[in-house]
Image (cartoon, rainbow, N blue to C red):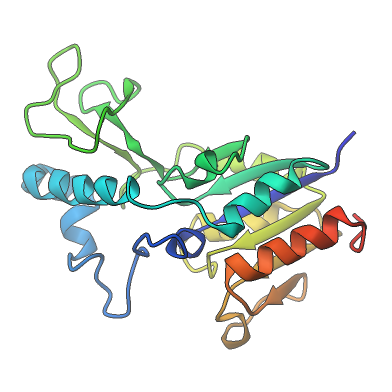
Length: 233
């Protein structure tokens, strides 16, 4: 039976492909306050703004490609049972060939009914407009978990982490909860690495080995060490 490696990924891994990170230095998200574009209240207040914001993010997604870190995860699948748990709403993991991907915060290329939340559609193209409805006549909205909404896959993710023989955290500084606490579900003897170019500036529990580099450089190297047997799980 293959050993299970769980990848916890965040915005940093997608940033190397050119996708804007969740928050930039001034606390804004692509020049918008998060409260204005990423909450249920924002959608009720100004649905046109919210839809346009996600349309532009979706359009950008069609203009970028997976990077070396995404492809390194695909290589890891040759010898390990790799489970990816991502906070990202893009599809770069899937486009790189990552097979088992759990999206915690929804998916940018999907939309769902405001009247029947379980009714989810794959969106053709990058535009979702006011007046686009489900088969029952309810407005469609981005299939995104907004602030103030529950994370439906959180306990599924926790169960995956609890079975892991190793955990690799990449592209996230473990600041955004509840996803930031997922590594704590790992067994006490489970090796955990975090790849973060600011790792030396942050404090992590002793159970975590920090790698102070970008994902595109550090993850392929770590994957090679695992595949070559330099690191034994």
